[in-house]
Image 1 (cartoon, rainbow over the protein chains, first blue to last red):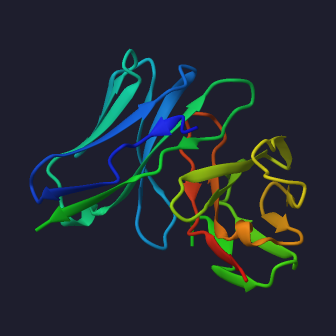
Image 2 (image 1 turned 60 degrees about the vertical axis):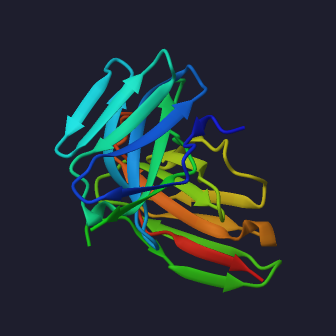
Length: 114
Length: 114
């Protein structure tokens, strides 16, 4: 039972255009969300996060949007660059007790074509 | 280096053997996490340490799995009597400890059980 879902296994975008990666969640207790990027044979690298008290967070070319009523978040990368080609994971956590664990989606493989 | 270091990077062993995986977190990071990623799956939480204690062991799949952390630094994940389904990439992450602190990952140990 996937609590965090990334329904698009892959996405292909032209260099310079916008990449939009989507993530849906089912647990209404989730209140903190993160995006990670992963290259082959490397560990995930933190990109950007958002708390449920916000609906948008921006860091350079990366913006995350959160729609709590729809239980949906998205990562926008603009402009996309070939070096952005990687697998992108959405992760979430809730504030219960000592909870620090992240619940992960299965990832979306992004290919940015020159 | 300054990142999370995991060893070995690859481990091949026979079914039934015990294995130990090691994680050196980023210096000063009080929180340490173990995850695993099986083929085609997302990251699965195993255990979380705050200092030397483990407030959340809920992800350990069976009593064959155990982990310890000493001196608030290095952690070892031990799998006894390995089974083929234990084959996965085992990832370690560390953070400053607060929920809003992103987890920084090592490159993982790829474990293959023959």
